Length: 294
Image (cartoon, rainbow, N blue to C red; front, side, top):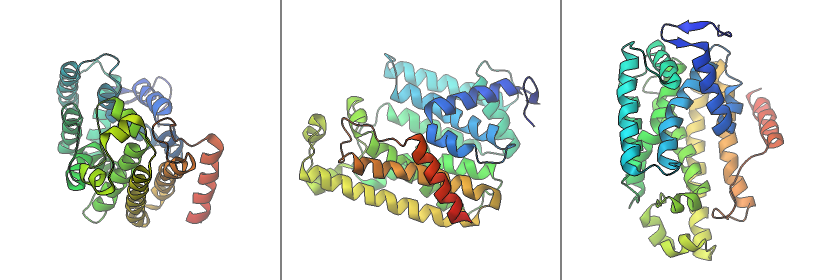
């Protein structure tokens, strides 16, 4: 049991896990809300996983004047420190101390961690994806492996469940891409596949100007429906999870999928309005999911 000032295990303290929880509370409000419904013993490890992926993602997406070369260096150092922490060596980062302990305790494969960090490196130089298949390759590292690592925390990592966990990661990642079209453009990136832009007659000039033309609306509708299909496919696997994890996973899925409805409610304006769910909306969804789980 985690308590104030108590050591969870060698190399990681309760303070390290509280630091991770604070990161999730600040930057991942929907994830944090759903995490509160996991069994108490698991919550610190979910916080640690979130914090592990949040730190390099922030270097890539919110650089605050950091050059691509500096971001690359930071990620390389982060990976080197991760490997040291996994070997039981002392590192300065509270996130890596906590996550390394979690990774050892739940036997998270190293390749999931390195695939994620490779995806973060890819973000520094790959700014367009021609096909959805190419984007799927990126999403494996940026999001699919996170679903796979969650299965490790549930001690349910096996071939039957892995495809559902990967689909959940893809659904949430696609939701991010749709919500952040304008923000990503300002970072120099377009995640929506070029083949889809061409199919619907949308140009990068339309994105640059935030033009909500009929072609743009049709493109966004198409991508939203594709993403909802991913959520539906992913949620089939929830019934296969141990019972104590089903509700928070379903809630996390529904909370994030609700962002798609907020995009629609905002008139598909993904350039000037950030789609987000409010506190009462989260509570309402929590009740709806509880009723569904029965």
